[in-house]
Length: 215
Image (cartoon, rainbow, N blue to C red):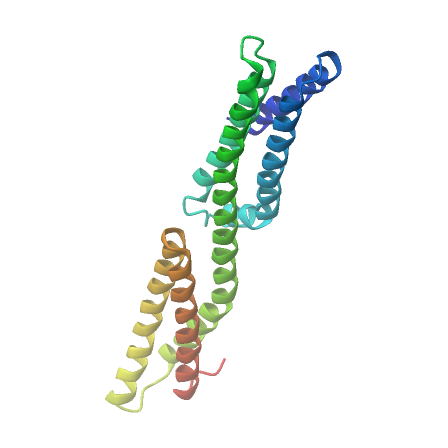
């Protein structure tokens, strides 16, 4: 479901519920269910709004890593819950005693969406944080690698040392990509892996400096 269509569903549902509240007889259980569902939906909306800046930045950098599917699933399901809420509230054939339980079923589903949104927010923050921390280190290490490659080795030992440092950088860049993927599979493990790569990148830069790579 596209963004404009989702917005249209939300607006139509809100207008219909307002009309029902003004025109229909009072139903305390219905009012309670509508309030509880609105609060549950608002909590999901809040998390989606909070994660949006990081999410949009990742998308712009082509680093979504499957995040788009997860994000769209949450947004689409939330719109469907709002539509079902309207159906329950407006269904004249539904017994009044069943309305509150049905609406509370929507609250339970919304709580599941909230957990997904919270997880997605943490993933986006972790991915973006790792990328922002690693980019300057990788750029520095590549600069120093290129400087060492231009250096005339004094002997075979120094040549092997320069080659080993270049190989280490390649390995670390691969580990960095793996850490980003792991964040999507297991957030805590991915974060820990990323922190390890950042430490090793800094160690590599120190070793490059000791080998004579000064920009």
